[in-house]
Image (cartoon, rainbow, N blue to C red; front, side, top):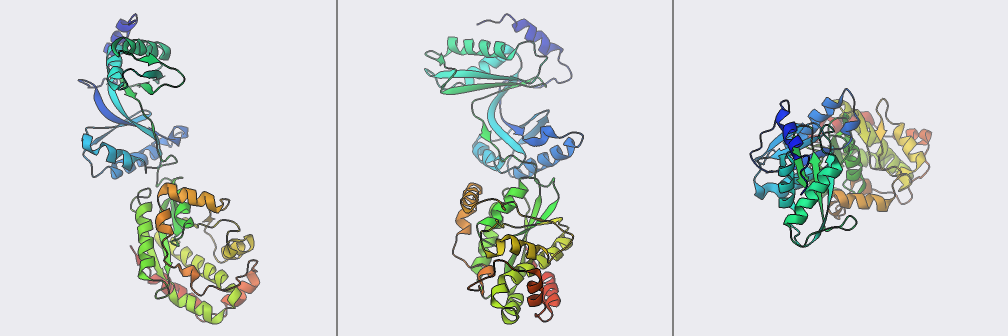
Length: 409
């Protein structure tokens, strides 16, 4: 093995005072890489603090330690029995690009070679080296590190061969600025996006169907903190329908920690719409009333937007005309529709990916299906919607009652 620059590396390590590390031997760790935070400027620390807080919250039930350094975080001092569970928890954290189980050593070339050989568990197989030299002051180039480590493995792992195109094992060597080197063979994709809770707060209209949970997760991935509102029309919708929504919130809470749910009793309003509005406009007025209640709850809970699972043209209430008439019922708060351009198959695929699909398709009724008209209007007008809405006695009082009596879970 060629160690022509070995002494230079050792001298380099000896002179490193600022970032001196304490490693008696190779240490097992989980290396975390963040996603878009590297694009941030002077406010980067705000996003990092939130991401670190979210990681600690997700791992609160495990004995472990989180170390923070430039460009990489480490989880160390964990029980090996908890490793798979920790990796599972990390997969839900927005803001993480990827993570790897790694062996950590000092930047001495001998230590790197020994650590890489220990990680190489495919004797008589093929391998390749990939080196990332984040520390540009390191005296060896990425190519020189890879060559030296590769030679060491070839000399000490009988039958092993280098294959740069289709190797059975890829050994990654990550040389960091703080004197640490991470060696790993697998990179696990993270949830990506921005840290949850860095983009304000939104109110999600959660129906219990397939679309709305997906819409919520899509904006949560951009950092929006969520609380959900579900409209419940008991006894027309059952207790099982309510429990279904609670189950959806529990699944979503993997991504959205400490997520709250408000359950709004909508029965009186729906009965009034049935009794006083023309049949074809019932869905339009229901959507308008939901929006009016949502706006009041948003103010009450400090939300800055409303989020829905609407997809353009999917059903009668989601035509452009219907959306415009629904929007007209509220003021001073934006409505986000992250699925507006998605087709149903795309939404189903995302629902399966985040784990809500099997719960969403449980056969429990939704309040939007109560008193469902045979021929709902697809091109409603604001004037006719207002004409129907004004037929309902004491509508504003019914809305106030629904807001004041909402059950917070």
